[in-house]
Image 1 (tube, rainbow over the protein chains, first blue to last red):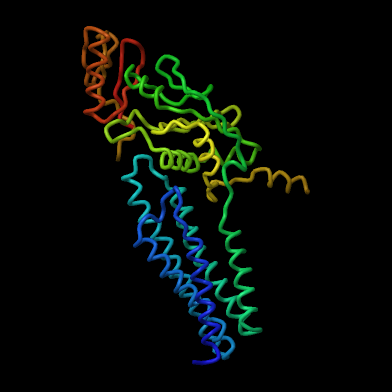
Image 2 (spheres, rainbow over the protein chains, first blue to last red):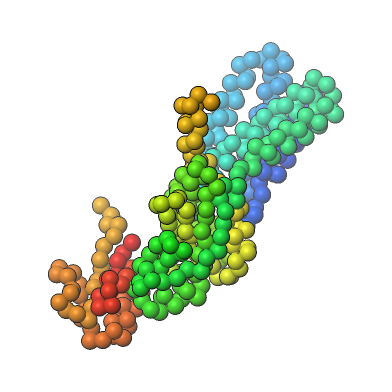
Length: 295
Length: 61
């Protein structure tokens, strides 16, 4: 036992708790399995350890020890690759795939969460060593909530209005409002589509969100989330029954056509509203304009 | 190269309208055309699109 034992233990505990808290399995069902969770908890524990140990090494004037943080960085970049590979492999067997943009978003989130854990542990241990255990706990709690705030991204309901619209056919063309979705030939398929299909119109709230929802990855994420939460009327060998999202070129609205097993209008609108805004899809064209105008 | 979109079969009741150099199924009635298209859609794993009342195509997407 040294004077650093308790601060290190506290740092590791709070860091691992932060990781545990950020590892929530919700309706999106990822990570699904116990083993997937264990991997992330273990990596979170390692991250907490690395963050914590940096403080005593500096205090002991062992400055070179801090370089292991760079090893940590490459280690967690590996986590991102691992997540990307696993999810890409799994995506091919999904009825409605997540899409690459969504996968990349998830992979980035997994990497960044480990860094948040490192910072939380580092600050906790530092505060403990500079003051006392209570200082450590308070700073740990503050860092915990900051991590929580940093983790939560935007939701689609912040940037679009969602409206339910019954899909309809004009000849062989399937439409949601005035947005053309696809051509369906067989009368039998048309009947199925009208029976199970639901249409939604996403109306962008401003010019920036118009480009965001135009992103194909963002649209695929919407289809995936709705299909996961409400089920999907689709199987291999029925390629005609496919959820699609198409864009109205005139005003940037997006028509979403889905085939849920459970036709619940309100829940579907709620789920679309809760789809995360993918970081890689965010565009802010108006920022440039403002800069040009010198504001 | 992977073909992204490809016409796998054409089903028609009007032989004059059928394209050359493609697998064409000639049918006598709309009902027969629907029945054959339903089968082909399942077999070929493509989507049946209607170009008009007389001609369907099955496309691999």
